[in-house]
Length: 533
Image 1 (tube, rainbow, N blue to C red):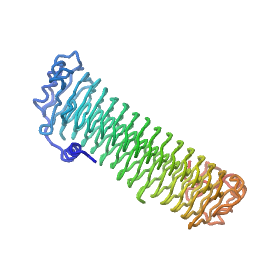
Image 2: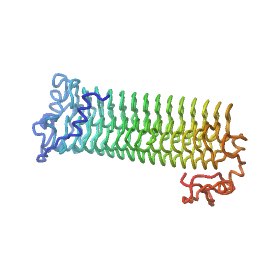
Image 3: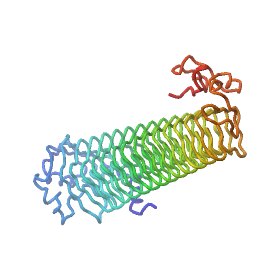
Image 4: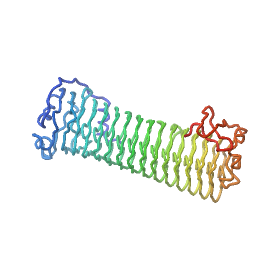
């Protein structure tokens, strides 16, 4: 539940404050000049040199002994925001110290209004601590922050951002290497984003409890574009390499650090209720308990498209190489893939642990290991899977399938090639099925104890039509649905065209006819999807 203080931040971000810029030209050469900015918050300022602990005014204004041990007093407040222009000209402000545990608006600048501009400055070796939040450069930004960076450490009781705590303006071409710590809304660059963040990155460690992200802690309705994070991220709820909680838009972005959390843990996004993720990827190693995904932990309604993950994913329940949970019939995963190995207990899948939505034109190649409801592509399917495939080996105890472990939806135009090992309800394509399977096949070896089939292990109340398995490579002569064929027959176009498949023969595997769902090099290959790499 969002605290009153954080709610206040969000309300202020929505409201914004406007103002006018002043006349440019005021030069800043020491801490006294910087402190004087607060006397004219609409002015235009130019930093003429680096400021550090040896620069006049440091001890009394910006050092650990300044202002009764509180250090620097932030420029701009809710009542009087900074509305001017500050150009750092590439110089640095070093050794800034702030320790204001009982205050908000903590940062070099406390509040930057819509007309405010801060650019071309680095805040280096900073040590910032605030109550509701701490920001290395700005607490609340409604204006423009560009070509800026922060190094050091930033700490907040309820929110923190390496560069900015709350953003409802524009942050571009910025970065932070600062270590960030906060109970909630902890972001390597921005704690809470309701504006735009672009062409920016973060590399420091981020530690928090909830809404913890390598770049952004919470992205309610903002946009994150052309950004990346290499942060090491640790938290409990809604934890991710890029954005912990995302209800906005993430595009053309990636994350590469390690992520450790408990619930709703993702390599790129931890929890996405209304947000979208597109053209993005993660190579993070992800470890969590429930709802753990290589790209997204939980994707409620927003879509995942043209995205991928390659890191290893480990969890207990609802664990997927790309998405942990794709629920409610609203989630969509398309043109995406995962290649990392996935390890979990229940509801474990190479692409998604559980999907109640739509999965299309997607694939997984990592090995999948679990206990129950384990699948090469999906652990459990309650939605629709089409034009997709899996190639990794799958092992578990019950409801284990090369493509889907437990199936109660619709699978069509899909296949699996990986080996499958389990105890009961073990199938080359589907372990347990109470749904519909059509125009699909499997070729992997299948080994199990009870209810074992080349295509389907156990079929209750479901239908299987125009689907096949290779009796030779699977080592299984029977299946609870489907038609068994020899390897030679599985590589003949007639087997599938006579069954009504949308298939055409091509010269070689590198030649595609995308007018058809399936292509095949007759008498040479198994059918393959015309879109697949």
